[in-house]
Length: 112
Image (cartoon, rainbow, N blue to C red):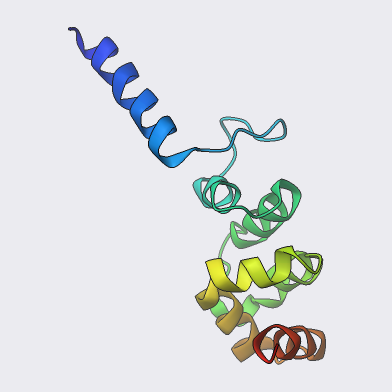
C-alpha cells in the first residue's frame, strides 16, 4: 500500500471514529479552532464568528471584548454548550470585560 492509500485509510478511520462534521460554510481557509468547535457541536455560524474574532492580529487577553459579541450572540442552546466546550475562553472574557450581559447569561447557565 502506498503512502496516499495509507493516508486515505487513516482519514476514513478518523472520520468514522470521531464523526467530523462537514459544513457547507467552511472551506480550507477556515481556522482549526472553528472546525474544532463545529465538530464538538457548536453551531457553524457561531463557531466561525467566534474564531474570526479570536484570530484578530495582536489580540490579547485584554482585548477579549472583540470575542464577546459573537459569544453573546449564541442562542440559549449554543451558549451553555460553548461554556462547556471552552470554559477558559468564557473565563477570560468575564475576567477582562466584566460584561453585564455575560454575567447574566453565565448566572443563568451555572445556577440552573
